[in-house]
Image (cartoon, rainbow over all chains, first blue to last red; front, side, top):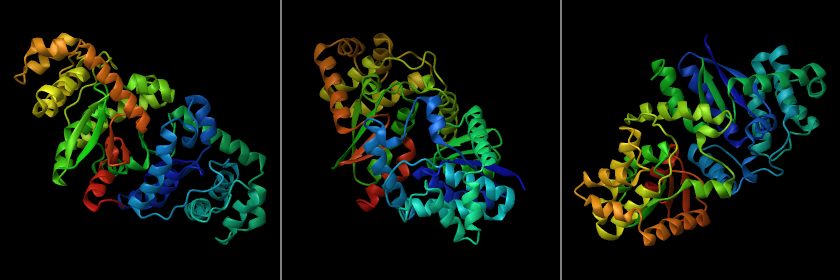
Length: 199
Length: 199
C-alpha cells in the first residue's frame, strides 16, 4: 500500500483538524498514513516565524479562524491554556509506538490531540501524555520512559531536521510522493491529487 | 443590496484567483462586492512579513502552490516577471473609476489582474495600467492622470491604513460585516457564512 507522509506538531490546531481527517482521505484512495510528529519550534528558527498567536494582525485573526474552522468541519475544539506548548513528550511517544506497537500510532495521535484541544489537558507534561496513552491499553510506565529516552530524543530531532530539509515550514504538511501540501485547507487539492494521480 | 468588502493587492496571485470568483459567490447570496485594492508593502511593515517568494521554505512552496491552485480552479495563470511589483498605479485607477464610472471597477480589476498574471504585462508602469484600462472603453489619458493624482494617492494610502486597522494582513481578505476571511481557500467558509448568516 502506498503511503503519504503527514507532518504535524501536537500544539497545532490545524494539525489536529487535519489528523481527524487524513486517514479516511488516504484510505479512500488506497493510501496509508506515515505519521510524522515534528517540533515547529525548530522550524520557526529556520523560517523566522513564530507561533500564530504571537504574530501582529495574523494572531488575533488566527484565534478566530481556528474556532471557525473547527465549527466548519464539525470538529470538537476548545482553545487550550497554555498555548502553544512544547510537544516533545507526545511526539516521542508516537515514535516509540511506531517501533513497538505501530497499529496504535493513529489512535494515540488522535487521543493526545483530543486531550489537549478538547479536554484542555497539558500534554507537554510527560506524565499526562503517558496517562493519555494508557487509555489505549498502552503501558503508562513504558510510555513515560519513552518520553525521556535518549534514542527517541534523537529520533524526533532527526525527523524534524529531515522535514525541514524537505521543505516543511508548517503544520499540517502532507507529502504525496514529492508533492507538498500545507494546511487543512489543501485537503480539496490532496483529494484530487490522490484521485487523479496529479493535476 | 448588502456589500461584502474584498481587499486585494494587484501583485497577489491569490488575490487574482479570488477576484475571478468573488462577484459570483457574493451575487448568489444577494451581496455586491466593495472592491478595495490595497498595498501589501505597507501591511508587511506592520506584520514584519514580506513577499512570499522571499520567505525561507515557504517561498519555494508558495511558487508551486500558486501554480497548482490556479490549475485546481481552472484559472489561466503564468508566473510573471518581475514579481512582486509595486501596485500603486492599478490601485489608484480602481479608486478613480469608483468615483467616476463605478460599473467598470470589477471589469477593470479583472483586466488588470489578467494583464499581469496571464499576459505578463508590468502593470506597475502607469502607461501600461492605463492602456489596459483603455481596452474597457475608459479614456487612457484620464486613467494615466489618475495614477498620478495626489487625491488618489491619499485615497489609496488611507484605504490601506484603514484595512490594517481593521486587521487585514494579507491578500485576498474578505469581510462580511465584521467577520474576516483570509485566502482564496476560505471561499468554502465564505459561501457557508453568506448562506447561513453565520455558523
